[in-house]
Image 1 (cartoon, rainbow, N blue to C red):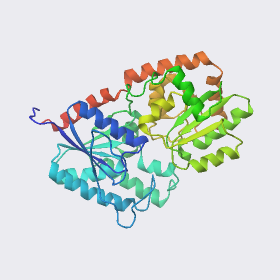
Image 2 (tube, rainbow, N blue to C red):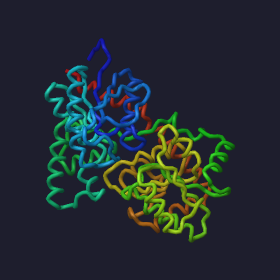
Image 3 (tube, helix red, strand yellow):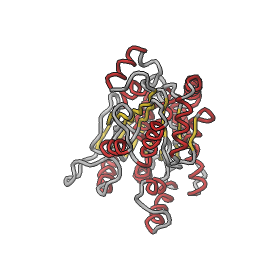
Image 4 (cartoon, rainbow, N blue to C red):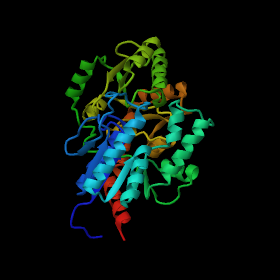
Length: 400
């Protein structure tokens, strides 16, 4: 299909874009990869969040009765999504995009409706099962009436768009197996910005200086975790493993980077007997600063428990040449292959501690695994490569 003007893509992001975690990183890096391909991208999102240089971001209006809200689920979210839908429809009518690209299930639903109204092809960016995520977070119980209702809604949403791209191969298989969506499903795995996440971001002296500034004792190995602080992310298991390794006499410091609930997990660490220099919480870490913090680590931990969600932090670890300990889940296997050090079953603390101890006690294994994981990221998980694939999918949808 020949064009005289750039392809226009309206992305719908039902979240407070940009925040420094998870789905926000995928939205950001997909957009930047498309911009490099000459695509015009406009992102419609909630009224809160951080602007990003070079991106066109359009925000919905705030609700008059709730001008501030927390990360994650909220009883006000329906109102946010109504306001987002109205803004997205107005933007689509004014800007006349060629493609509508909805992120998360609300974005897939809003985009699907607008796409039908305006006769535009719709892409749904699927990053994990909505129903399974609600079970993981404890919002509903499997087998309950609420579970059945949400499952039926999810089934309708996944059959609405013209194309679904998934953040993992496992996600594509889940859509086929669980929801019967077998056509127009294309895995587009989470990837990493390899120029930004580089193991050479700090030299030796800068690394030592930053470690001292954070209070990391000399001579300690550092285990890094970067992501949301939440139970389903495996943070309690990581802290219990840290306490277990302390009792074994291993000189480790756990550098835990993320938000929210920092106070809750700091109190949990103290209750487990972990003191200053043994667990350090940095709080919210800006995405721009993530490489320099990860460069302080010797081992990376990815203890996420979910069997359906991706775990993009693993790719950042890989790009930084960090050996990775992860629970044995489909997403972890997809990213790490046979180069990961796995704990099983998910949630098992002794197994997680044993995997960390193995890397702590084998320095050459750490170095070799780190090098191999960086090469694996370069071969399979570059955002530049994924941007080209996404553009090909767009063009195929627009071809007569």
